[in-house]
Length: 278
Image (cartoon, rainbow, N blue to C red):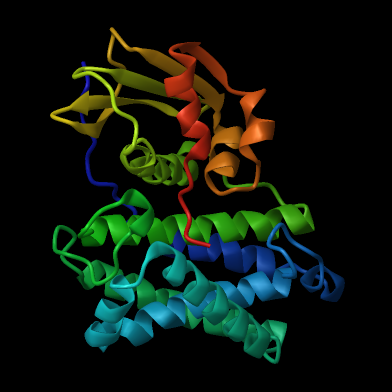
């Protein structure tokens, strides 16, 4: 039986995830730091610097409510451009930081970020909107879950670049997929359908799960588990899912690897899900 999706609990994962990153970084050779990653124009060192910038930005903005409110008033396109610009400026500056000092700074900032997130009331309104969900107001738990996906994703970019195993067990990856799929209602927002129309999404693998997107009262709403009488079924494996939702694989490439049954037009919209800002 389907049920409304629940808040995603990721607060306790931040420090363990940070420790996994630090273990990888501490094992790198000088040449490893310069290896290219899936992030265009960014090396392994650049991505590590970007992760440091993310933590420092969060900590610096704790008391910057007026500035954050102004950011929330930007259009999606304006916000993406601003984020891209800020990211490039920070990464360029962070190239002056040595690898050993970068590791030390990551350790300090990640511990402070862990304490900050544990302090926040999870159900209260976050200062930052999770724009790709289409929400007009995001709860802290959703904003924190989004931050978790950011840190998980970039760690995978580093791991792939230096040939380390990815963190794809259920502990690490299921919260990422569950967070990414919160973009489904927004992705389907302009598709009109009859009351009760349902798209079942099945992500296969140890970190996978089943979600149902249902049309109710003129809106699309997301549920856990499968609706028996679904209009469309979508199946893909967990590796394809996280890469598709973060633009690492194009919809054209993914189309041949996604299994669709029932209403194909309805099911294919999932190829347009984007669960990152930039």
